[in-house]
Image 1 (cartoon, helix red, strand yellow):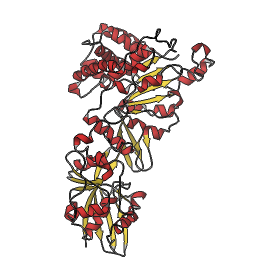
Image 2: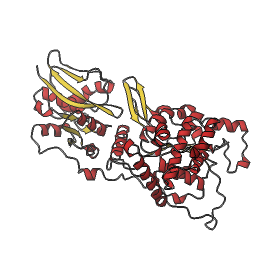
Image 3: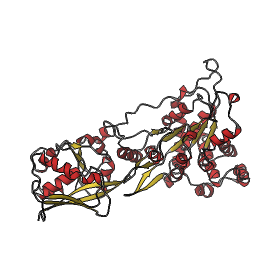
Length: 508
């Protein structure tokens, strides 16, 4: 009884599992069956694979064809198994040498004429194949630039099933190879972030933006329309350093699953900036979908910025969905086919008007005090408790160059941010943290405890209930960032007071 094996990959969030595909021919009336918990799209692969093989000038076996996907208890879905299924069937029918499929991952969707189409998640799929000990891989030629990011794996690209079969039989010189690693990892071609010099006035908000960039802190901007809230938020990525190698691969893997990678330069090297509309749904924000959940906006903002403009218009359900991700740095989504885990270590920037009518001047506001409280009440206390910096922005009162001083450019501010981040990285190096915002409260209070005279004001407001214990820890983190920007060895009482002042600035 002919039997052959091939390999592919199943993805669950950013985690992948190598899937062994066994093809057995014979033992019953002519038909094709797939076992191993396939979903509807995978069950339809029977017709796609049969047509692709027939249109590649090969014969489909005229007997019972059984395709088993192992681990059998693992739900599987998608069209990325097509190429592996076709090669397993042809190997079982002695049309290609079965031993050549050993240790090879095959990823790609087949068109009816045998063309190999790209699928989402090639990068995390190849990383999973490498972890499973597979040595070679064949992917769609259109995904070769993405596949080149994986080292330690002999990756080839093909445009059609016919090319793969000719290569396996030794009838061709070989399949396409990816470009060199240096070419494949060229800097992302996204446009450079706009310059901070474009923002007029707002010295407090600009300072808060610098502190947020230096320490990785969450930020809330409150002010009337036209004061520069959105302009400031869009300039935050320009103050952040490029992603390191590990971070770039993590972000690229998420964007690969989401299908948002640039084909010519897939590696994401700059912190992503994601700004969902306030009408977006909860699944679009945190992730969701039928069967196995797909990444949402907060995961696509991993190692970058999640900007929520008009935050009070999002509604409480959407905003409260952020709380777990803000604390844990990842999102876990349970669906019918299992639990997906997506990293979501992002920097949150909220921007909102102080009231529903939002006039340019507060004196012109027609909202009642109750309407104001109800509007800003959509930002709940537990959510605000996780926001380190809160800034009230004022209307611009002068536009002429004679009355407005020349603002600092992004390059000038980024130089200070880089120095502060290096100081923080050196401090937390042995712990594995890069910014002050990641330092846990117990470590700050025990191993890096400040003198009582420095924290006296913080102790008083904590005793009166003006801040929570979580808020006190966040004040300490901001104080360390302020001291890094000031190039001080440790925070002083003024730094702690400034950190508390950032938390006290509300719209009311």
